[in-house]
Length: 141
Image (cartoon, rainbow, N blue to C red):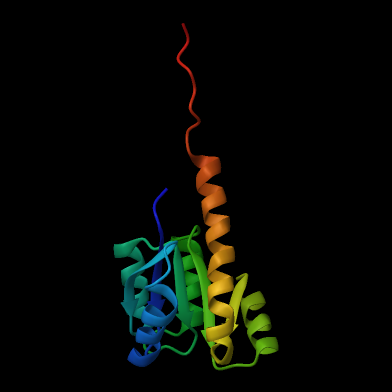
């Protein structure tokens, strides 16, 4: 089983760097496969890089995060999207619900909540990969 590939979409280079270096780059189960600085860039890179997870800032420019999430639910239905925003947790839950997404983290809680959230999502992906992989079947004699 390969590692879990994560694409980070945020207009702040500082946030992207922090997510790469502090939370993702040193963890064995996932790898940062790319970064996007706006919504159009995020859509393009999802198509090019085929990540398993997209960390998506809702306030990215050009094409807002909500529009990106809606488009990707159609074009990349297996992609897990974790939305991020400066909003409070209760607002984030409502935003995620409205976008039919399961994962949302307020940016104020990224350092606390991102690793547990990614770990949960990785377990789901690995479970699906295990269920989809061919079983070792003995050849008939």
